[in-house]
Amino acid sequence: MHFAPEHIGGELIIRAYGEGVVTIGEKQYRRSIILTRERLIADWRPQRPEQLSAADFDVVRAQHPDILLLGTGSGIHFPPAELTAALLQAGIGVEVMDTAAACRTYNILFAEQRNVAAALLLG
Image 1 (spheres, helix red, strand yellow):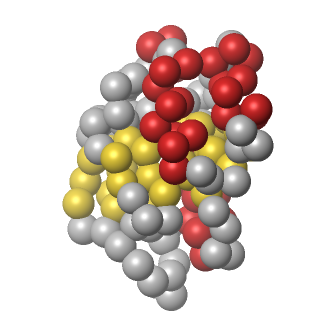
Image 2: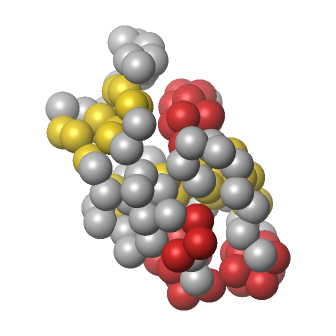
Image 3: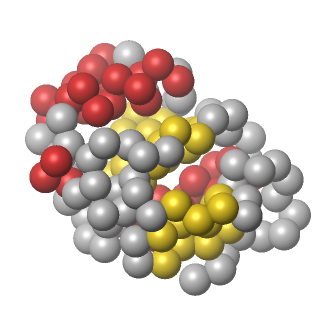
């Protein structure tokens, strides 16, 4: 599904999302990623919600976003609170949603110049 508005500038916006694949700029990714306004971290370790660990969020915390959008695949799968506790303690809000919604929300917040990160599970 193509959904990125043409007026958003920059390479690190999500151009399209389909089951198990996300397009950023002109490149497709089929493994989980972390995306911020300034950085793309490809091949993020967890591929499915049940594989998440607290350590997986250390790389997000190091980016210092105001909010993390956690896309958990085709459904909404809330991780145990202890996995995201360090993010909340660092003042980073966490929103859990399916990956398609996380992609759309990331682009909206990106366009609003918000300090957003998206951790997208694609497996």
